[in-house]
Length: 425
Image 1 (spheres, rainbow, N blue to C red):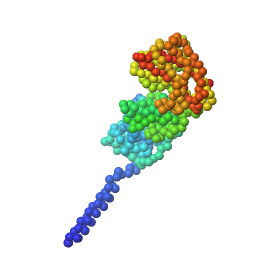
Image 2: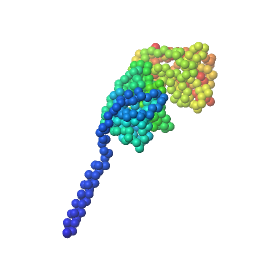
Image 3: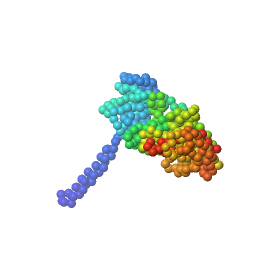
Image 4: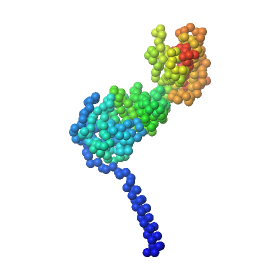
C-alpha cells in the first residue's frame, strides 16, 4: 500500500469517527416520557374524601389517582411539593427532593400509586406523601407533558374548599391600596408575605401569600385591576392564593372602587367609625408611614372620634405619616373644609397637600403641592377644634388627592395633631 492510500484511509477513518460522534449525540437527549399504562381507580376528590382533617391515614389499598401538574417548584413559590388536579379536585403531593420541575413540570400528566403513602393536612391543606427520591418510580408513573389546563373562572365570593389545590381565575380584582405596588415578599430576609387582593364588585378579599424564596419575591404587585390567575390554597379557615408566575396577572386596567375613574364629587368624613387606638383603615383612604412606623390612628376624646398623629413615645428616630383621601373629581371647582386640634405643643408638624398626578399607590412618584389653610397652633388651647376655613381647590383640575402630613420625632417634636370633619363640596 502506498503512502497516498494510507492517507486516504486515515481521512476516511476520521470522518467515520466524526459522523459516529454526531449520531451518538442524538441519543444523549433525555428520552420522552413513557406512555403510562396505569388506570386511575379513584378520582382526586374521592381520595381526599378519605381524609379526616387533623388526622393521618396510611393508605393500604391499591389506589391509583391521575392528575395534571398545575404548579411546580420552578419559581420557588412551592418547596418540595407540586399541585395536581383532575376533573374533580386537586391535591398537593409532597416529596423529599427539590427541583421537581425537571420531572414534573406544569402540564405533565402523572399517575400516583397511593398504596404506602400517607394522607395528611397542614392547617387544612390536604397533602399526599412524602415521596423520597429512592422510591420515586414506585409511586409515580409519568405520562405526556404539555397538557393545557384552563383555570376555573370564579368570583371571590364563590370560592369553596373543593377548589383548593386547583388553578383558578378571578376577574375584576386588584390589590388593596396598602399592598398595591409593593414587593410580593421579602427576598432579603427570605420571609413570606401576605398581600390582600380585593374584589371590585363586592367587599370580599383574599390573601395572596408568596414565599421569600420565590424568584419574583422582590417584584412589585400590580397597581391596577384586572385578572388574577393562581392556585387556591387554604390556611385554617382562610383561603389563600399562590402565584405561579407574575406574568399570569393581567392587571393593567384602571383601579376600581373609591379612587377610580375621575374620583368622588364630594367627601364627608367624621372618623366616627374608627376604632380607638387603631390605625385608620377606611375604604379608599391611604394611611402611610413614610418615615418610621407610626401611622394616623383613630382616637376618642369626650365622645368624639377623630384622626390623630404623634411622635410621642415613638421608638423611631423620625416619623412622617400621611393620611390621604380617596380621589376627588376636580373637573368642577371644589372647596375643602376640615377642623384641626393640637395637644402637648412641642413643634409645628402638620401640613396639608394636594396631588393631581398621584395614581393612588405610588406615593413617592407623585407631585405634592402644599395648601394654605388655618391649622391649630401653639397659641390654641389643647383639644380645641380650629376650622381650616374654606380651602379653594379651583386652581387644580383632573383627579386630586388631599394629603394630611405629620412630621415629628421623639426628641425634638412630639405635638399630637388631630383632624376631623373633612368635607369637600
